[in-house]
Image 1: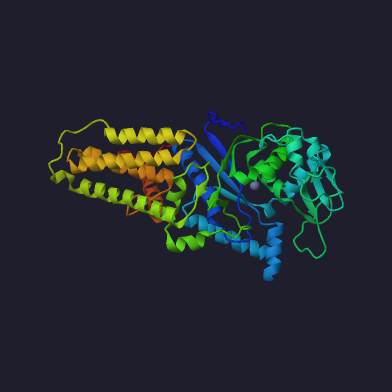
Image 2: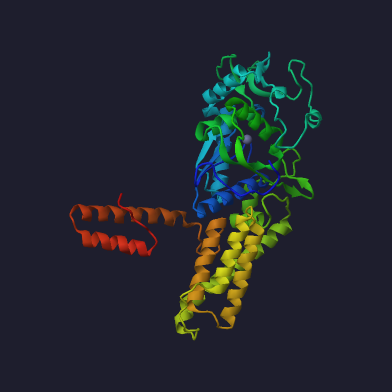
Length: 461
Ligand SMILES: [Zn+2]
């Protein structure tokens, strides 16, 4: 909102409530959307890495004009169409490694909250009823335009078609009264109908986060009117400002200078793309740009990214091979107590870049520089075993933060492995608990100590 970088300070200690606008599920997601979801997946990963406890919430718009229209075209019910595309969206996200959303909240499962918020807006004089629905009275909310930095005069330029039943042309819909033949409706104090688009987000965020929270994300084109409307709805309802401490908006994914969008017909669905490219190549491609910058999408650029990622993987493979060989080679034999300097430098630069508003292109440069340096020292045989171990560990950690598999075995498809690990830990902790119950303290302590060596800390509390 200030248009500046600011020091990040969550509302509650190290707890972060993060909300990102989710999809309208009437079609498959295209890679322009997916760019945003990958960007925020990395934001969540990095914040967790920094020790924050992140609650990442996304809405699913499963009631909307577009859904109703598409369903009618296909002779399906809007509900089943929405469920189908929601399922496909979630599948796309899994394939893309976008795994950090804690909860997907469907608009249709928050109708009472939506109605409650609209009722309060009416009571407070911010909303009014017409024959077609309930509208937010833009003129009553002084701060309207503060996120997009528009004055009342600027806002007048956006008018679509004037609706004589509205008080101001820019008043937006909170509740749409049922029109003839519409099947998707809910009862409300204003008769059957369905929610407008903007209100679902604030009804959902208020439910899980309260009136104020830390970060709101989304694509840049949502700033106006969508996010402006969210601010108006929630700040008017609660009287508390600001709705969110930090707004983060992703740049567009452009094709030949034009924003990729459904309406322009220049889109590639992620499903089509994943037939030719692996998910990591696309993620890598996305992360080569800062999240706020536009990305020019072309197959050549994607191909380029794929090759760069291949180079990292190749370097990773060499490091792994050397790690295995190292004890037999005449490497520098002194045992370094301190971290390898090239690795330590790379880590410092990586963190500095990520701390600077999630500057992933600079962070990736640090990864490349580290690998070049490590590779040079491998060739010159001047790297120690410790150096190789450090490089291997560090590369894995970089990969986890960015959600990229840098190793052939993958540091990501660990999903299954993680399940097993989790189960194994449970077996061990349960066994240990039984030992403690039998007062076999020594054995119990030994299990704890051994797990500790693996960085698994057990606390008896
Ligand atoms: Zn939204």
